[in-house]
Length: 325
Image (spheres, helix red, strand yellow):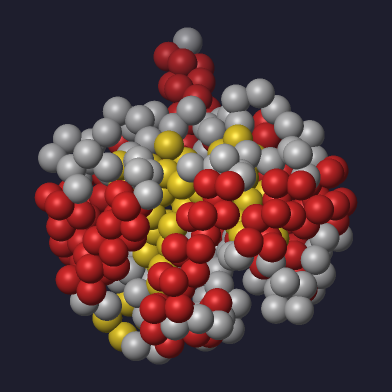
């Protein structure tokens, strides 16, 4: 299939990247990261999470981070919240673009570890969330399934199980007259491969052809970009990523595995195959290198080390011109 002309990239580094860091990252540095990324023309930057500091102490400064960064035109600044209390905290900042999402985890074990709820309990909470969102005039436009391709605790996830969960979420949305625009599939623990991507994406496209698909991919085992390319070949044009490959889930059972696909690597891939992103790659590479300084350890991004190919192309052209003259 033809590749999309352009893809949308949602930058998650400031949120997903910080949640897994073992050493505390100063609030000022979190703010600086958001402000630097705002220079790259992302349509969305996910800033922080409004979750319990007891469970995710790295997010205890969520309100301070939101108060500190500078909004730039053309970029939405979003967040994650897991319950009504988190939603109310996010709205109270009066600074974020608070969106509504209906989500569930495909793995029963991981759902309990990550949210302290079973799948059924999550779906029951989702019904309550719809009511709260509607009371706050926030219309959910996305449904999402975490661990949609596999789980470190339960192994491969049956695509038909994922389809059933999406069906239940879409049914809840229909019952409440909600218009769902995006179906998100999250490879939370890096189990996907190009074949499983094509299989599940194809099933979703066949069942819900009007909805856009977003992929939240992790590069845990080195297949993140291959999976993104396979999805683009099927027309998927909406992706999550994190600068320098920041991120990961603190409850996924890893010690030092890579997290999300690195944004600069995804942008580089798109540049090389003729797919637009609208993201300023040269500046993003600089920020990826700075992100290592912020967290104080090496990060798994590749392009920030290998370099920007266009700069090499310019140098090669200059050498050829000089040789001719």
